[in-house]
Image (cartoon, rainbow, N blue to C red; front, side, top):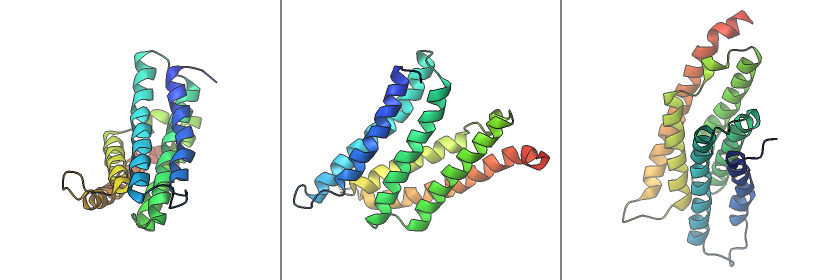
Length: 188
């Protein structure tokens, strides 16, 4: 394993996951629900920022590694899945929406792994639509975790709208990646 700043940020993101989850299972008299929501949102925001930052630093510092390329998307998917499962349990996200998003992440990760094995990973590299999907998904999760109005703006409604947009973009990007891999799939 390569020890460098980008990989340490990725490991930090993984370590944040149990901290994030534990907040929602603390005894209710330990912390007000809005405080739980605030700290969970802060942890998720830190994770989202480090997701961007570790990739940026890996390229800027020329510290890319095969291990980092493997671990970064795993950390991202674990954090998103943990947040969606918590949001489903809290009744803030419908289970089918969470299943669409988590299922797509698993399917595309498997597709990328298979395409890498056959030497065709470039055909399923991250696309613009994938980046837009991730942005919508991260903002939606942040809004749904926080839940309280911000400057009078009802963030729950905005979060709900964005999570549906993210689910739509999830399906669209999955179709995009499947089409990109179709020739290799037919050959096998």
